[in-house]
Amino acid sequence: MTDPEFDILDELYFVTPFRDLVQRTKLSPTALEQHLRELLEQGYVKCFYPDPDTEQAYESTSFGAIVRDCYFLATKAGLLEHNSR
Image (tube, rainbow, N blue to C red; front, side, top):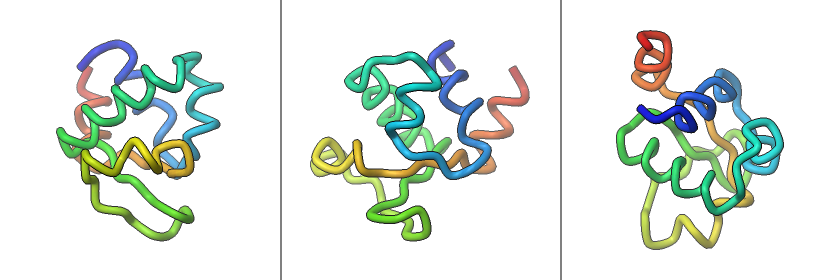
């Protein structure tokens, strides 16, 4: 797990919108999107769209079109990985 991914998971103990993650992690939107893709592919993060209650399955082809309107939450596996570091 990279330092930026660790910092992202640190913010995802509760459902958090993309725009808040940009502010809190100080990552560029493009960098944040790339790290979120990696975390989603590893099963460490869940994505919610169009609201914080509707889980959206990760699809790499359509993710870029909706990412800035999504909400994110760490999974149990993500939290375990985060806390074991």
